Image 1 (cartoon, helix red, strand yellow):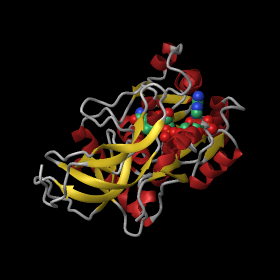
Image 2 (image 1 turned 90 degrees about the horizontal axis):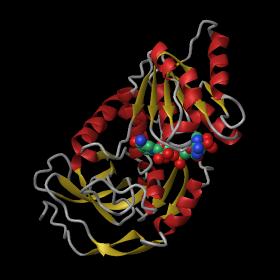
Image 3 (image 1 turned 30 degrees about the vertical axis):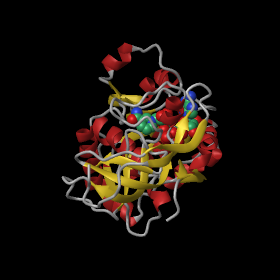
Image 4 (image 1 turned 30 degrees about the horizontal axis):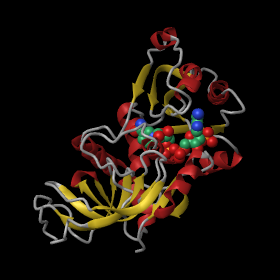
Length: 343
Ligand SMILES: NC(=O)c1ccc[n+]([C@@H]2O[C@H](COP(=O)([O-])OP(=O)(O)OC[C@H]3O[C@@H](n4cnc5c(N)ncnc54)[C@H](OP(=O)(O)O)[C@@H]3O)[C@@H](O)[C@H]2O)c1
């Protein structure tokens, strides 16, 4: 499709390619994407690592139908071309975006509904840390769990990319973020971001600790309103115990295993709701709706600096395998960015 910017949308570019057997990652020539109706072509400056990339690399998380086979669920960069039917964006715009795939590359074609502007004065490396974690935190806290001002939310892996975003959104919305995190450095960062209470789930029973904290302020407290969970099976019993009546448990990852035993009596008696959620598999129109709603509620706070992406480190995209090892080591606080092109 010849776009309004006249950019040549064929030829070669560099991207990270996964070797089908060894799963080694190499930066090599691949065909350049072409834009379809409703899409823009972006020159990528930065992308970021998500755990889904580690699973996709070993064949355990294939991209949804129609999405790029190239790793990478988000990116920031500069628009080079737009399809004739795209009215809101023009070549030269600095953007970041949620992707179904294709971020570990020099260029990507993305539906315009998945774009966010880059705030004035921000570096593109920083903007690449926004889409996946802030939109995941937003959709699960506010849309799936229906978190309301004044309610409490237990955020597991509080120092993770999603966790650092969730703490800030909950605090900004007038909610009470309580978190679990492994190790004192992570716990300290969570406190700085606004967590009301922090505990180490590896050393203590987080349900006992959180309930004791709530009851220290209110002896009649019955539990938290929402749990944002990544532990799954390993956390299930304690998550059900820590929720109060009408509580909502939102499951976004299976880091502690997929199969667990559940006390349905607690679910029944406390009128709990169990919600599973993925962002990547949602239709483009729904992603666009989520992005618009996030912008309406939190964009002003992001631009004003009251909420901000937390970045652990920036690594050249050619060293993506090293970046995956860093994430797998569970030692990061916030995002690991892959730098693709200088500004
Ligand atoms: N469903 C969705 O739509 C969606 C979207 C984005 C991300 N996710 C998932 O959400 C999770 C967090 O994403 P992220 O990018 O924020 O991850 P991240 O920055 O890589 O952080 C993950 C953290 O989880 C903790 N963790 C590791 N193994 C654990 C286990 N077995 N039980 C409990 N905690 C464990 C570790 O922190 P501690 O040291 O504190 O244990 C680790 O640093 C990932 O699994 C990711 O795949 C889901």
